Image (cartoon, rainbow, N blue to C red; front, side):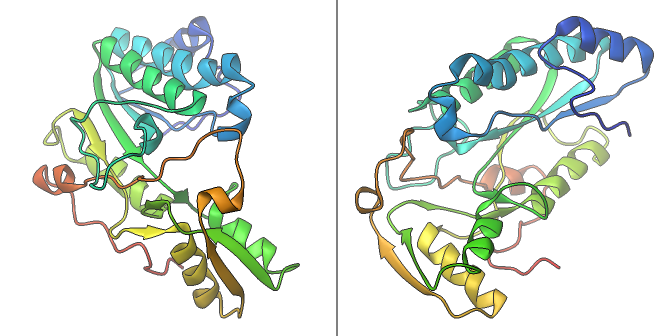
Amino acid sequence: YIGTDIDVDITKLEVLEDFANKNPKIDWIINCSAYTAVDKAEDDKDFANLLNNIGPKNISSVAKKINAKMIHISTDYVFDGTGNIPYTEDMDVKPIGVYGQTKADGEKSVIDSGCEYYIFRTAWLYGYDGKNFVYTMLKLMESKQELSVVSDQKGTPTFAGDLANCVIKTITSKNQIPCGIYHCTDLGEITWYDFACEIFRQAGVEMQVTPVTTAEYGVSKAERPFNSRLDKSKLSENGFERLPAWQQQHT
């Protein structure tokens, strides 16, 4: 396993090709890179496109050239967030902002490359590192006694380790998992308000949390999807283990 970060610039095809030449016999390439600042992307379209579209395009091109399989992490933001049912993998994408559009373009670039690909769309991702909703709530409890949290956007919090397990399962399945797009989130359907309440409950913190609508909370630069629910049935149909419930504790 070789991990890379900014030392390999995915926006430059020649850099990726040079890396592949120096590291022969690459069987799998996992792309976790992305521009994820949803609001900032509205004013930073070119850079968001570089990371979310051109980068995956270059990676998939190299994957095709060296006959490696590619795993690409995507998002529920490729949909417009309307409707009252979870999105399935075969539904048409319809992004509503720059972030979602560049991620949708990145998916298409990977598919069009002709490489063997696995695209995992996830949502409301959190883990032990980086900026995420869990750490934001825990940080706010140090300075706030009450919070207002949006209660009309629905989705499923997803622990990064659960997504990683799906990636590992794909690689270790000995080609038993068909290529394609998969939706990968934990089980359950809640709002951000529900999520915040559970975070404080598990942290043993008493916090007054008030549910508010998106309109009441205030307008963000980028529109948020009201429906971020993803149908995960394709995972179980193709040999993946049932993902845990969203509120399961991870220690």
